[in-house]
Image (tube, rainbow over all chains, first blue to last red; front, side, top):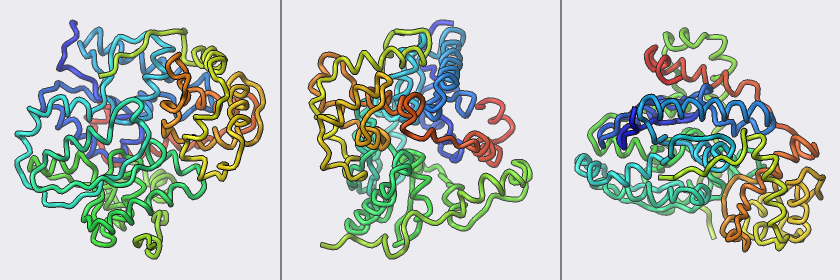
Length: 289
Length: 143
């Protein structure tokens, strides 16, 4: 099948599976801006970046994923892989492609939406009266000017006031967790900037940042939202967030836990949902002096 | 849209093996990457000698043991990317962030100067989150 410009594979990565609503919203945004989307992710489409300590296994994972995308390009005409995760995007560009023959190009979802802004902007009709601080990182701009791209989309939302937060080290919060003190310092800086700037919403760009900041939702009258949720709100679409609810005392319904197997839920999920927030109440206040 | 580079090796493992020494050969040990790195402050290395650290970076990327300052620095890499533009050898093809990344891998897998972090519950946790939220159709289509 010939490759078509509007037929894409949306590669949402592994850890986005914590945030199913964001996957669905991303697909919907791409579809409403004219793309025919096939989604793929999870362990079967692992890029291998989380297995740097197992180079042979990581190499096999990368090869398998590339070959699946090659097949989508050659048999299904999907010559563009649309990324969400910056780790996946950088790994594909820097390591997977130089080590495998690829039959596709990649584009980050923010790039595609900005490129399609003439189709997206008319759909943003519902005012979103929020004063939003964007949680930003320095990294990934080597590959995609992500902060500018997300700002470019959010700035088209009627009623939304956007404040650019401090640009933090790393490409997303998950990497900082391995460096003692770094994650807490970064989240504290973002939260303090939100308070100082009288923001009512902290907007995350990537899922690991959302995961880390989720437990602060509602503190200091500040909500935590992801950028695709804000775009959906502007389209009049309900953008619920189960993970934020679970992280703040809620729990999945019994049927969902049964489906996931209760023993697995208790061993693998509950410890994450019940862990201490990244900031104590006292440390979340504005930095003085 | 990013047009991906042509393959230079048969596998990513082979690519990384050949790239480490290639990138290291382009490095002049000037220390600009280290000076530009925002993580240096988080691991208390600002007083370290950038030339010694980057000399170790070259060695590590080629599979040789490096000084502890180098190991601590590459171990703290969070892909901020500030090293890429700071590197005066960028114009001749030195991707400083990739060099650091390869050095970090080698510190884990070859010189054993960094612990190999492994979370055996990584994929099982993700799959359980998926089962909590995805429909049968989504599980079938997406995973």
